[in-house]
Amino acid sequence: MRLLFGFEITRPKPKTALHPDYKTLVEFAFDIEGVSYYSFKNGVDWPTRRLQSINQFLREVDLRMSSKDLKELMKLQREAIDKGMMTEVVKIIITIEKSIDLYMELDTYYRLFSATYFTLKEDISDYDWDYNDEKIELFKKEKLDDFFFKGPLKKYLPQTNISKQDIQTLSKLSKRNKMFRSQNVLEIMKSLSENGSDSGGG
Image 1 (cartoon, helix red, strand yellow):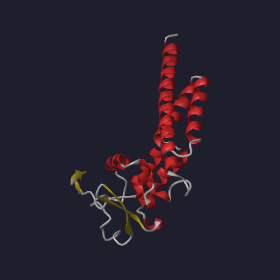
Image 2 (cartoon, one colour):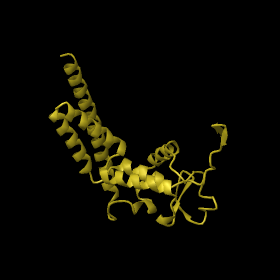
Image 3 (cartoon, rainbow, N blue to C red):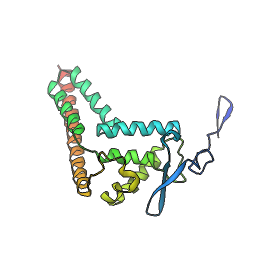
């Protein structure tokens, strides 16, 4: 409880899967290391704020990168255009295209699964980033193909006949793409910085 303009402000109590509003709407999904995860039986029952996060992460699955990464690339692109550095603009376009051309980017799926599957103690009326970062770390401790082939998760994969070997290959491609993207961003930032220094000293 805290004071705002002399009035007492109390935070709303978290709504878990056991809350009367949700208890009959959720169902068991899977276990990981003794922790049970649940999901809503019907998509229409999701709390609004949680659903907003799920929709955001679904877009990121389609983009094969996080919104944060895309915004960073767009910011660098605007800066490169302002400075007339078309070589850097082309690098950014190639970086984005390389991500979009991936069949799957697994980290975006981990984020989506963290929003769609929840524990009994988790507040499911919203999306807690810190709590779900911990969930993702636990997800990643699972053997890759075992995790992605848990029954409920398979429905989110791009095709039903994807194999465990495919997942392993896609994991390697995802890691290579992230490394390529990170290296490109660092090189572009360095180039933009050096260009800024040169123009400032003229």
